Image 1: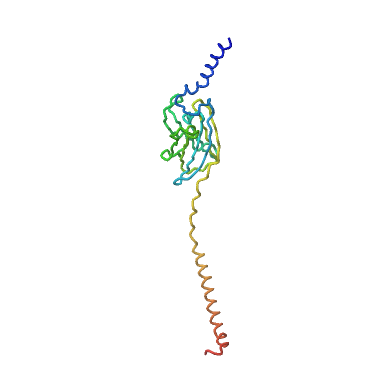
Image 2: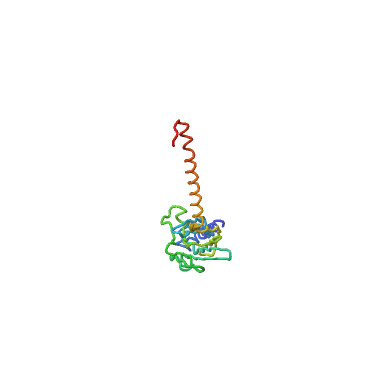
Length: 214
């Protein structure tokens, strides 16, 4: 009697363990149950006076499970710029679209923004991580908020301080004419005093040498 129950239970267990992989034949992750995505790295750099935000996200169901990434640049009064990236055309479609859309502001530079993925399938990093580079024109802002959402609606959020744009070199102010005149007058006075001192000092030096000049 017990054997009759054990065999169906084993078959049911195998079915449940493999259900996620069968339901997602294109996932290609590390064969785990659905988990939330993660934001593992945010880095700022400069490129031709623009600010590049390098964001690395990870999902143990596979980087293909990432659906969207939203970047919000926050100023004193709220969002200054908001850009939304979607990897797929729809949540139910595995087709890669890599679509960027700026919904607030006019700072995003799509021609200098891109997505990087690994073509390998040997390591967890190859299977689960992807990098997205968002490039912006100079913005004076306070913080950056990144929200990642996977195909099932699970999210991850991270916040970072936004770097200030490089300060411009201050314009060199012209020197007032009065200062130039005063400076020349002082130099002339010093030179005149020096010449008079030399002419007064010369006869004393000659007397010491035993020669008197007429």
